[in-house]
Length: 459
Image (cartoon, rainbow, N blue to C red; front, side):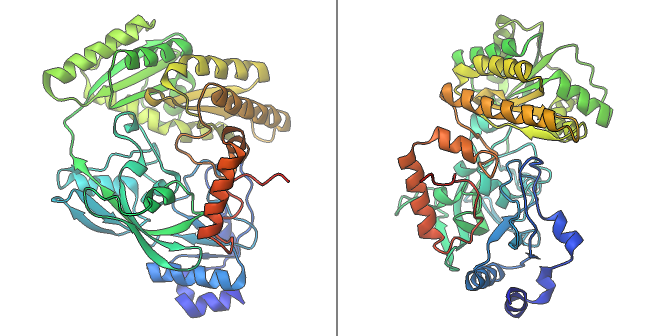
């Protein structure tokens, strides 16, 4: 019996079988993604515990689904019936911060903001900053190749992962990657595992690249009557050759939801707010900020200014981070994560607006606008089957339009369960076959997060 085998291998204190507790581990934040009932939650303390768990699952033919903090938005950590949920919550140590080599070594359960704070104490900075950074874990960020507010300039998680320790689908504990500044020995297995959503291996340790701590940023705020005008401002910033350290879009619906929830005193007289930042030091940074103000104005901003009030600027960015949980309070939220070329941002925003009108669906908008990563949030009343059906149709249409404009179905949330159909639209059958071959090689028993990411084969 699986439970007896797990108790013998890793100890009963690592297992959770209470049904009410199991239910709390069964799904992530993707409210619309299906999920099953796990047989047990395993909370390992060491990499050896993880290896023993995988070996037991191989012996019993039981799927194992790895879970971090459960903040995912695509169903990638959702349980299947009878599976083992492997939670990394007890593997939460920062093992090393090395100022000389500018790297850190952490266990997968370390919270993103906790790592950033620990690095800051030594004058260092870990750039990937998803909106969920106060709660999401480094292991989960690695699984989805998470991005964030500053990725427009500094890149996503894969750009900072130097090496990994992981348990493969054959139950082996391996190390891939390096600690050196350079290294091209063999295939890039580290890059392969980053973004694989637990389908190719279970990460037990992460070595990340760090940067020096930045100077304070300059913040630019622009108000727009229309979301398309805000999209034109994004295009204008790129056309001017500017690389902001953040360029975020938030619409009135999101700001109101945050203010109603947190009473932050946000009084913005605009349908859409575009928030820019530059971290270039000195006079050059001020010049970049003023150039962004000019770009905003040229695109039709009703108000554009470089902020002189750091508290006000921080409040607006805090509201951007709180937008998703604030909107969740209004009803079930179906979250998009499409990414299009920067030149296509105005057109894609216009299409999203038209899709919402056509289907009669309330769509709020937030976006990492500077790199074309758009997050339209489709909000439906609870227990309204017709609204849910229309929202799902709108969701699929947004995906199709993003692909038609040269974009992708997911910029940072991952495919999980919600985007498998979209992946089949985006990638050619031969490319999907290559990925299935990799999956088969690294997980020959088919136990690692089955049913996620890759669409079913059509015979």
